[in-house]
Image 1 (cartoon, rainbow, N blue to C red):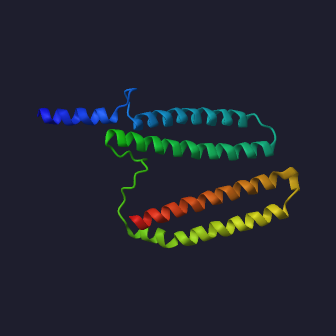
Image 2: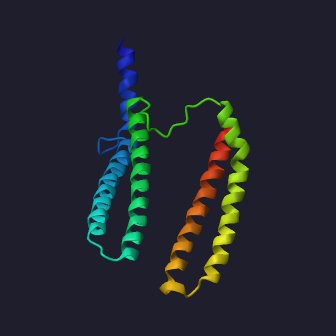
Image 3: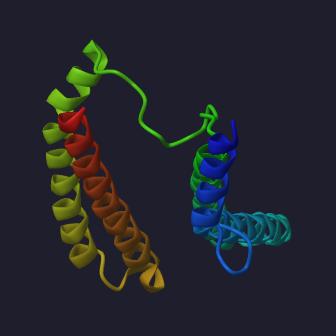
Length: 169
């Protein structure tokens, strides 16, 4: 029985730092602080958006609000994952991969290359549209298309990561 306590003590000493918390707890604290800042920023954007008379300004701010909402969801999932690791639980919104390979997983793996190709084709088309619409509407088309290019590049990166994880499953 005393040996069990010695093991727990050794483990807690290993996990703790001079500040008294483990590196994962410190990381969780940093993510939670960032999550609170994301929430504050999102509310600020929404309040600002409510007072904008210009359709263009409202449109652009709504794009930002949508992105901020996605950021909040991503950070929340990361926080849940870290909390689950600390408490030896698996919250429903955890990012830990626990799914077994299923038929739908195999189907997704089969179509991943096609999705990547579609995203890359879209990038090429957006770049053509950037050139064709250069100078129109004080550059708003260019900035929107450039943003869509970055989104599609992110989608390619996410799909390639997903593809590798599906292969490794």
